[in-house]
View 1 (tube, helix red, strand yellow):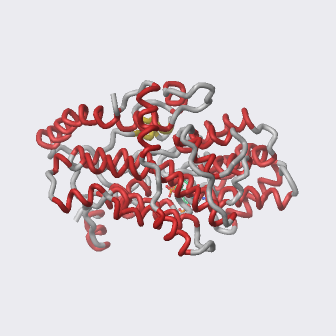
View 2: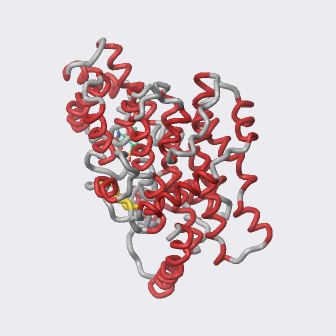
Length: 433
Ligand code: HAX
């Protein structure tokens, strides 16, 4: 069944369950909030609802109940491909069902049909100039397409709440279809001063990104699909997904929502960490002229910590074990580039840094996250421009975010509006006054 038809079939039951929960149990407590949570970034407060993915601190992410290995195993692939079609993965995120190859191909075909990027998007990017950060170029490209929004147009015409999900879905499909071409344009414009390769009608969405980027090694097509799947969603409380959810809860559309999310992704504690991470690794390799020893890494890591900086790619706000997205990329590297010196360095860092962070005694999680591994693979295939890595993250994360935004509207989730208090009030509450 086509993705949109499947969604239409599923929405009434989910909506009834959601409304029923609020009506019947709305006043029941599910958690308390501590002083530390109120004053400290709302860590762990259960206050967002999503069925797209769930992040267990020890096990890592599950997409619609599937671990990463289960997801990669279960989803349909094209003949000869190592990694499944991203269109099929999108179907899973939206519906919770593993699609057939035909259903996955239908999403891919829809993306192809909607993939042409209007020229004004490229004009906006070029007007900024090459010395602008690629995340700014990419975000502006996304934001400039807001004038295409079906949701905004329908809202202006007047639509009922029950209809909201449909134009949100259309915006999601339209935006997803174009993100790879916009990112490839940013890449070629900024670093090479030329244009991306034309889209190839025979390639799937992920592989076509690799083609438009002009990366010659065909293995990069498989990596592109893997990368986008791994970066797609991490519950809805992470800063970029949460920002998009908050923005769109005002009934602004998917373009506004994801432009906001991208701004959050651009911070070094979030998506920018992949750029920081490879920079740190290359600095380490430069200093010791190749793959460093464990002792050399030990010294370098302590120097970083003693100068008051974090070790990029390590630690996490929720995870308390090695991120399975790290493990999945490591497995890809073991298969495709086991002898790459940067990969070897990253592997030795993995042996040394967790113990150092434990001794350092601050980070609650001493283990690597997704960003500790993503740059290594990119540089291996020739994408050596670190500051582009967050753009790649931005393509992938949009998959989960747009699935969430569509479901937010389908369920009728309201405007988000937490309550703030003053320090005086917090002190009184804390002391039980
Ligand atoms: N190196 C050094 N110190 C670290 C650290 C690291 N890798 N990770 C955490 N800490 C420190 C924190 O800075 C904090 O110190 P202060 O008390 O002085 O402020 C302390 O340990 C407690 O932090 P935490 O509770 O363990 O971690 P947070 O939930 O506050 O932050 C971060 C989670 C991911 C931001 C953090 O671990 C970090 O800065 N890591 C390095 C940057 C990074 O890899 N970011 C990418 C995360 C994955 C992601 O979202 N990708 O998009």
